[in-house]
Each structure stands twice: as structure tokens, then as C-alpha cells.
Image (cartoon, rainbow over all chains, first blue to last red; front, side, top):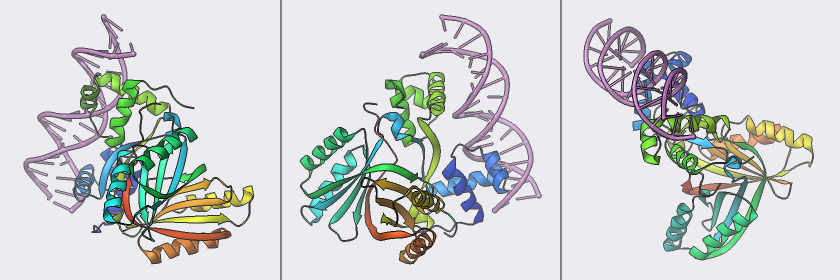
Length: 156
Length: 156
DNA sequence: AGTGAAACTCTGCGCCT
DNA sequence: AGGCGCAGAGTTTCACT
């Protein structure tokens, strides 16, 4: 499912991951291609699904969600129905940024953005009310050393 | 540090988090404001740092990085100098998406996007070569149930 | 504060190399 | 394939409410 990207595609994607508002003219000059060539490449990268979306990234602290929490969850039951329920429940919770099924087949990891401890507790209560949980433990982020949506495009 | 956002700001941010390419005209109609009012609000939200950036989100699998790995790290030493070294090293590694200092003051969590196990091992080797690590354990993501950059704006 | 219109920039697509 | 250019869309500024 890996698309074949050449040097130009990689340069375009590198720039667009940093700033999606870059005018085609500027982008073209920066990577050594005409606006038009850039435009056509971007179109096909979007069509191929390499570029999934262009979005605005917000500062969690400035919208009242300064606390990042990771929850480690052990499934109550190990069947497809439980996973489906769990997936639906977490997808429906907007403060949940990521949900991952980890190696081991029984452990799940959730990353969520909340206002404070009380807000975390609300999230926790909501979650356990909707899906039976085997075991839940939470770790709170004291300091965000790095956080990026930029992916490297050296090889590909 | 929380900005005061009204109903309109919240609607604008909700839309822009989903699609930053939305024309001002459409955005205005959708939330019940003129293009111009929207534009000025967006400008001040950017100036206030609420909107941090507008970026293109890529599909990791399509650029050859289908494997997500979480690394749990215990610091070798517990001092400011070690943390500084660790922060610099991880920030310089482009496959590292997030680095978090967790409650407990000795544990760090890294999220990285790699090509495969061999690629992970390269990352691991690079990291331990640059910073002395107390203990490192890795968990691999088998299934990404949810992954979003969208933050909720109900209260704020 | 928000609105409307005008000026300007950028993009999207055709055509040519 | 890449580059040029125009028509239309989108953005920014201005004057007014």
C-alpha cells in the first residue's frame, strides 16, 4: 500500500506537513518546480490518500485542556464483541486522541486531553459505565518534551 | 493561559480542526457569520496562539512507516542535565512523534512511527548511543483503533 | 463588536513544449 | 512528463454601521 514517491513528492510533503498554507508559487520555488507541477503532484498525492487531510492544530492549554493522560487498559473479555464495543465508545469520546491495541492482545492504550483531574475522572467514569473494563491505570503527563504530526520522508 | 472563546470561536475552531481548507464563505454560512467576521476571528485566534499551525496530515502506512511503537524509558540519572540531553536527542529524531515525562519523575514515554522491527531497532540503537538509558521497553501497536488531532471545544 | 464591496492574490485547469 | 497564462475563486483591506 506504499505509494512510490520521488524526491519532489517528498519535498512537497515535508513542506506541507509543516505549513499547509504555503502558496504554490513559493512551494515551487523552494523545491525547484513550477506552481503547476506542484499543484498536479499535490492533487495526485491527495487522490492516492498520502495526504489525508489539511487541518488546523490547536494549543490544548489555550482551549482549557492542559492535561494529557495515558490510560492503560486490560480488556474484561477477550472477544470481538468487546473490542467492537470498546472501539465505538472511545471513538465517540472527543477528548480521546488515540486508542491503540498493543501487542499482547489484551492491552489497550488511550491518549486523552483533559482539563484537570476531575475532568479525567469524568472520562474514566463514562468509559467504565459504557464498557466493562478488566483493569484501568492512568499516567499523567508532567511535561510534553516533544509533540509533532510531522513524519519523516527520507526513504519511502 | 486559557483564551476566552465565545460560541462563534468554538464553531470556527471545530470546523478548522476538521478541514483547514474550508473557504471563508462556506465557513461563515455554516456558523452564521459573514466571511469577514470569520476572517478577523481566525486572525486573532492565530495571533493568540490558539491556532498553532495549519498542516497536512499524511497516512503513515503510505509513506512506508506503518508501525507505531511506544517506548517506556527509565532515566539512567535523575538530573536536569540528563533530561536536557534526552530532550535534544529525541527532538532531533524525526520518527519520534511524541515524548512525555510522566508522573513519577523517572519515567518517559515515546511514541514513534517506523517502517518495521529492523527500523525500530535502528531507532533504539541510535537513542541508547546518544543518551544513557536506565531501562527501555517497547510495545508495538497491533491496531490503531482511533487517532485524531481534533480537540473538543464544548466548554473552554 | 459585524457587514458589504472593492482590490488584490492565488489557485485550478486548459493549452503548449 | 514540466511550464505559461488566463478566468474564476478566495482572501485581504477599506469604508460604513
